[in-house]
Length: 180
Image (cartoon, rainbow, N blue to C red; front, side, top):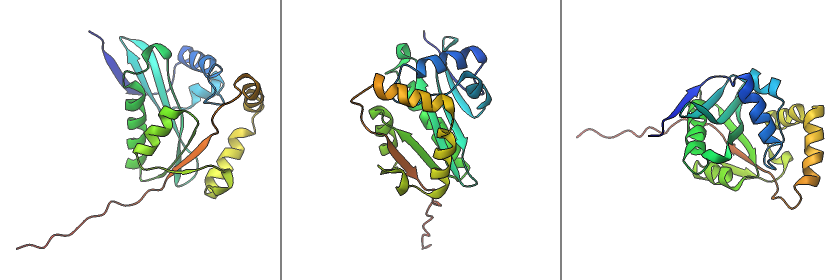
């Protein structure tokens, strides 16, 4: 019987190297270097029968905004609900902290997940809140990512455009009921 275990921890070096390599093969994520991935400790990890299966990483990008920065499930573990569970765990941890949430993707499965959670979509960077714009600029000004972005422009032509998804935090509405 298959055992799927979800944990909250940083990626190990071997896992980070594998994920970094796999990200080079996908048009959906610009990329991270293994050393960066190891340092991102706000990660939800999925393991199937003790084998690394996937990761979802979140980052706090300003005093009030968090980002679902990256979600990746190895191909042999896809379509088993692992990505959805990783996303849900990340989503719930950010909502628990009462933070606004941001994500960017061109992956149709991820966009469907974001839509199901009530995210608002924007197609242009200037339509985003200033803290998110500043984060995107800081994140993009990295030689590795610029190189990967240009490489992927040529390697993965005819891709859907990136969409920016926002979910501002709003306090839950508590309705008062009249006692009879």
